[in-house]
Image (tube, rainbow, N blue to C red):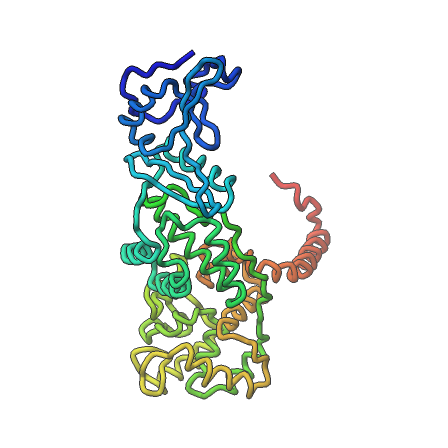
Length: 428
């Protein structure tokens, strides 16, 4: 049996579902079946030449012909072995452009071919774009209208490590294997948290490329993210906060107290203006680097009255555009303040030198929990995007309150019993 192709063929090769009649030469194997090396039994040689001439998805492929049980056949071979012993794949995208890849193993070449043919049939193959990773990174960040300035700065910092290794690659050549090799090499140079940040940046870069049609799929999703050891959050006690406030330069005593009892982030402390302070109440509206981290970051923070009084005294002594500044009136710089003010105060107070400035925010949240604040109130005061963030980060602190709650309920039960109210818990 031969398969006649009288009309010009303009689509991709039909699958077994569309032409399931077996040929005598192949027994039960469908004549139009696609197998890993794209072998299509498609009839007489002259007719197949006509197919190739009119089909952009087939032209340029290599053909082999033969006869089996009296039936002439032609098969399309897209995976070929090179003189160097590697395996080259040649296929055409939906626009007729040839795509060529070379692999060390034949199985890898066939797997890639199957993936590309599936994507082509689904209309998802992006073609042979020569857009490089570096070029796309520039376009991506340049059009990132909805990203906060702090997020853009984070991505830019990550790209400084990513682009020297991957920037010259075409975006369509950014495979899971290359990404995995890159991240593995980084683990020897960077901390796991830094490598994970680079992973997230690549993921965001590629997911946007998929939405814009530059990639068919996101290759990062096929790579396991680096494992980041969970670090224990460090808190100071109220007494240690006082010791730190006494040890630091008097100009920054109020900074320590507001950070430790108000829970403001570093950028929020930098951008705090006198008009945002109303007695012992602070309205958080901005951070110096740009937009606030989350929608919930715009909030009202009520300080202890004693801290509010010290803050008022500080603003009267050191007036300026911002509440906390350098002696010359400029905003505080993170590195210089940490090295020349904060670390020296830690040493003078006899506190752990591993304490970070951000740990003062953790301290404030821990003190709120210790004071009995409800988790939702803690989330609101901290400016978390949701209570889930609060519980994920600080949930282990709440069980310490279980004993106090049980004791209070026990006391309530005894009091009600004494008052003759024995139906507690049986209301409508």
